[in-house]
Length: 377
Ligand SMILES: C[S@@+](CC[C@H](N)C(=O)[O-])C[C@H]1O[C@@H](n2cnc3c(N)ncnc32)[C@H](O)[C@@H]1O
Image (cartoon, rainbow, N blue to C red):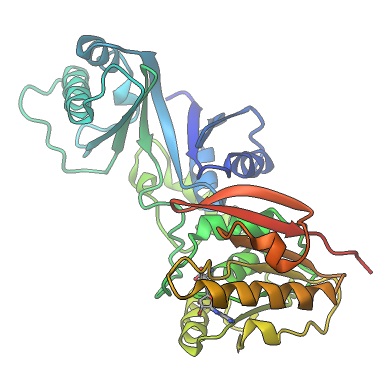
């Protein structure tokens, strides 16, 4: 099989450029950024490497083909003309998912059934199978995505979403996705030798992701991926990627990272999650009311996802916290603060206009990432 493939990394809305920067940092420069995705040309080795290293992408998919289709016939014929045997083995299991946006072919279940039928026909011909395909081997999740009558056919290489790092044993009420937490850290200028604090750490996602970044630990190091079972990516290629990750990890990098939360249960959960991530002694945990924060170091970074006060009854309390926090941080101008919230009055409550604001989504909630740059001393 030729070594060149086209990959698609899916990204949450607003994080596309962060994902693109990560892909470029891995050495793949020919990237194209679109809504919710980043497309790039690479060699096969990029599949293990991207799955292991991408901190902010949701999944990595291989693009099998793209074409214009407005009728089921076109969808069938063009799907059938794609080289599926290059990717799916004779015994492969290949369920088909689908989505359709602003397209004539809007019935997703029909599109899925047609694509499935076309791939079955193609593979039966290529493999010389007369009866039913066995579908007893490795797993290849196919997706047909229609957008404005353009069909993109992909196979998912990741398996479970890349946010599933494998360290989260338990969580609180509103945990951040690990991919978003990593992006929040990457959107700052924090370097591993600066202090970093999350005063509303919940299950510890931001600080755990920061520690992984700080020691350059690949986020996928403790999990497996669907494409590890595929014959066209050799075991040597996976071993090479895992060895590279092991070699690049900097376990000696000292870190000053603290997670605190008012709820002692959350501190217990965070500690267990950090232990699972192999970061047991690296992070300091503290049960504390956020407004009791008194930074003793300079040039630190506060990165937090405080409560948003969306539940009736919580709003006043949450707004009072924002106000007190704004007062505290004003007295520590060398600290940079980064706060993610859906509260539109945040800047007024905090008492200062943010240096920068970035629109993001926390799941389906529209949020802003308020960024206050400290004055380095
Ligand atoms: C939105 S959650 C944070 C979720 C976290 N980012 C995660 O990934 O799990 C907000 C957290 O703030 C904590 N909290 C609420 N009021 C607080 C206060 N006044 N001081 C400190 N923590 C507080 C809650 O216990 C909760 O864990």
